[in-house]
Image (tube, rainbow, N blue to C red; front, side, top):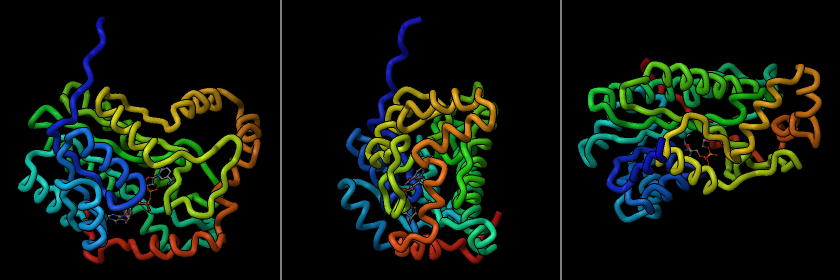
Length: 288
Ligand SMILES: NC(=O)c1ccc[n+]([C@@H]2O[C@H](COP(=O)([O-])OP(=O)(O)OC[C@H]3O[C@@H](n4cnc5c(N)ncnc54)[C@H](O)[C@@H]3O)[C@@H](O)[C@H]2O)c1
C-alpha cells in the first residue's frame, strides 16, 4: 500500500482548552502557523484574550472553565458560531498539585479529578456528538507519561491521567468506522509553570512545550493514537511492561526518576504554581 498523504490543517477549526499558557499555547501557535482557525479557552478572560492576540491575529480567545460542563458546551457552541464546525478538539487544560496522598485534602482530590479527568470525558463526549454526524473530526487528549506509570507525590494526578488514557483507549474502539479519530498525548516532564521545581534526571530530561506541540501537529497530519513525547518513551514503556515489577522498579529508580514528583512536593519553587492550581477551582455549579 502506498503512503497515505498528510491531512492538511489549513482552514481547519481547532479548539485548545487551557490554551493561554504552556503546552496549550505552544500548540495553538503551531496550529495557527499551519493555517488552522484556532480558538483557545482558559480560566481568566483577560489573560486568555491577551494570549490569543499574541498567538496569531485571528486566534479566538474565550473564557472557559472546563469543570462547568454546561459552560464548556456553550463555549463549543460559541466557537462553532464564530468559526464553523469544530474539526479538532484538544483537551489540554490540566493541573498538577503535588502532595503525598495522606496529606492531600479532599478538595484538592476533587479539583484534580474534575479538571484532569471529568472535564476531558465531557469534552470528548461533546466532540463525538458534534463530529460523528459529519463523519469527520479528531479529538486529542493530553494525558501524560504519568498515565502509564505511577509516581509518589502525584497519586491523584497519576490516577487522573491513567483515567484519561483508559477512557481514550475505550473511545478509540467506539469510534471505529465513524470517520472520527482520537489521539492520546503522553509527554515526559515539560518545561512549563506546571513543572516548576521538578529536577531533570539522566533518564527523564525535560522537553519544551514546542516539542509537544510539534508531536500533536504530527498526529493530526498523520493520525495515530499513542503520542509519546519524546517518541522513545513508547519503546521504553513496552520494554518496562515486560519486566517483573521489581526489575521495572529498579530501572525506574535509576537516576532518581521514580522520585521526580516526590522530591518537589514541598518545594518553595512551586509556591506560585500551587497557588494558581488551587484557584483553578471547579465551578460551583459544575454539572454532569
Ligand atoms: N508540564 C508537564 O510536565 C506536563 C507533562 C505531561 C503532561 N502535561 C499535561 O499537559 C497539560 C497542559 O499543562 P502545562 O504544563 O501546559 O500547564 P500550564 O499550567 O502551563 O497550562 C495549563 C493551562 O490550563 C488552564 N486551566 C487550568 N484549569 C482550568 C480550567 N478549570 N478550565 C480551563 N482552563 C484551565 C490554566 O489556566 C493554564 O493556562 C495538562 O493537562 C498537564 O497535565 C504536562
